[in-house]
Image 1 (cartoon, one colour):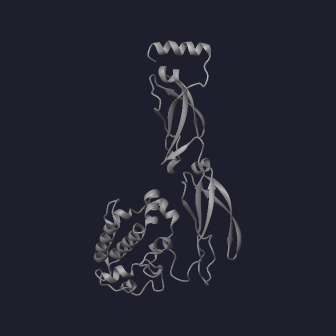
Image 2 (tube, one colour):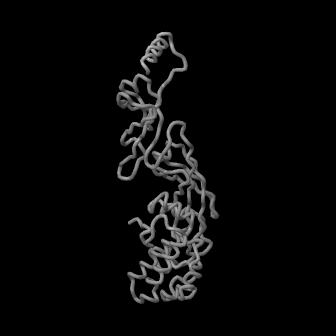
Length: 305
């Protein structure tokens, strides 16, 4: 189930850093193991609160979470990524529990990242199991066409690792966005320690713009020129979609700049659904007019058209 970090801390989505810290401190006091000995439910909630604060207190992680949601965020950041750079020791020390909160869990998690209350000894939300440190993660830039980002693709990726190079075939999911990070588990550097697992491979996505289409969430946007007569009198118009041409109806008296919605021609989503395509209609004004067209336009001008 996707996690709502804002709900975990009991704050609004526009909460300030000060409000986040205040909410976290309150929850931490209520749920700390010193106050809830032998209470597994409180322990799990305590871990959830720490994870939520680790994400929302970091500007980059919070921005990614807000943009991609819980599911998309989990594809970009491992458990180690979530807690990397977050130091809880001063916060818990100021709460009167001492700088090392691992002792509150019977000494579990010792030897983990400083200030990380979700160390491998907790299991579950702690990411990789306790033991030898994993290998380093690898990041690679991958450029996609706009079409590939919408409908997905497969890419051959060459990865240089500390124990030799490797060629991978990676599946790019439908609806990938510019700036997204895609995680490929266990394809990073080998651990330098016996028994340590590999790090992960991260693909940093760059989507090239399309000359016709732009994206807004799960919808696609395109402009299409229509004859003045079609806008005024109504009729049928052939427009470009990502799947080829499609004929749409234009109502009489349609103003320039009006939008027509074509359902199910947007970005593919899970469950087989797709967003919509919005076509902005612009008048197609010829650069040159024939004598007959000029005469007709003069007549229309006399009628105020």
